[in-house]
Image (tube, rainbow, N blue to C red; front, side, top):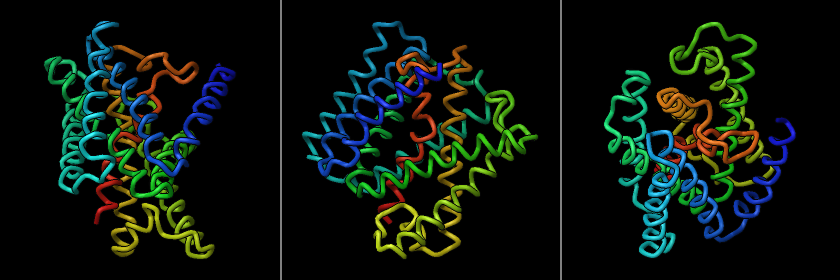
Amino acid sequence: MLKQRVITAVILLLVALPALFHPSPVWLGILGLALIAAAAWEWGRLNGLGLTTAFSLPAACVGVFFGYWTGYAFQPLPPIFWLACVVVWFGTIVFFLRLGSASWQATPKWIRLVLGLVLLISSGMSLLQAKLVGTAFLISVLCLVWTADIAAYFAGRRWGKRKLAPTISPGKSIEGLAGAVMAVWLLAIGWTVASASWGMGNDHVFARLLAFGWPVFFAGLTLLTLASAAGDLFESLIKRAAGAKDSSQLLPGHGGVLDRLDALLPVLPLAVLISMW
């Protein structure tokens, strides 16, 4: 299992890093489209579509993405669009996390499928939009999510006692979430200080938040961290409703694409919205 995880991770890095650092957004757009299409197929499978019929969701994602590329030529979309994406994401997450996995299974299939398309397409497009804001901006968002995930795991193992969502993901704790928030605060402060000291520029999400003052800085970081945790819990809810351990086996040793992107998906639209203020 460990060997599979390492091999898959190395292959993903070899593909992702050149696309991430390439000056043109086209290559990251292609990679993002591939990831979102795979996640859409997994979404269809988790929500009752067959092996073949689930490909209708990736096809819809591809159609929307090419419509955007040809119609807007990689131009930024207006803040109102990203505000709407954030509202849909957080409204969906809060609604279903409050009611539990049974509520998701009780929701008509067509609503779950359409909702999945809206959520995944918005996140895929926000990945491209974040690249348009700047490579450093996108990297700072990725590092925030990875830091929150790692810190939540280790803080939860060391100090976790109170369950965060016992019926959805018993392994997650309130202490782990608190550790994630504090780790992100430290990351942001360190990143900001290093940027100022070494002349690295202010093209990162932490500088965008700090421009509004320290209270907004810490509040924004906390909100982004909570969004990361909520995305993880939301995917766990969907898998629990479907009776699945992983979203698929597309990534050997890692499970599915949704398993790797779940915490990032709701954070990206929120980060893009922040970049526009």
